[in-house]
Length: 161
Image (cartoon, rainbow, N blue to C red; front, side):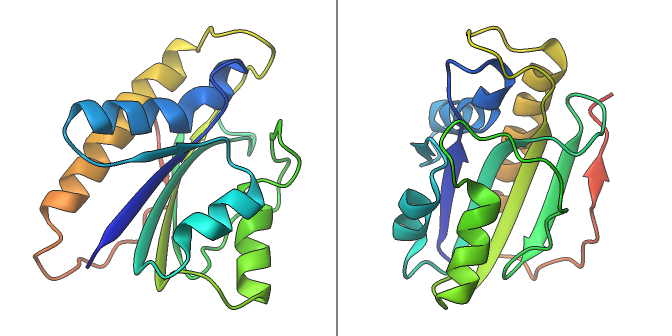
């Protein structure tokens, strides 16, 4: 199955850079990954006609900073919590709009990295940086195993601690 990877984030909004940092790390590992700011319309255009899309973004659910959340499905069942977005309509809105327009990929995996600081600047919390490394490694392992029958997973949260 062909997989498209999209890391979302703003490098100038502290922990909001998490998805972009994962994409950069994957690129250094030789894995193709797109970087976007996470705007809904750009995301929808990117995943058009894709079989499997992996999306990575910073989230706020109330969990400790650096917690890794994994949601799967079409669309995945994301929690209804405060979304941090410097670009208006973000990932959750893109998924809802894509569902309404019947233009979602066959399968979507969302990796959410719990952020804590979203002010202006390029300082990333150590917990989020550790989670960036872990998510990149998880995605790389998933891609390596794609030729095997998919395992049943029910991962909701992976603690970054």
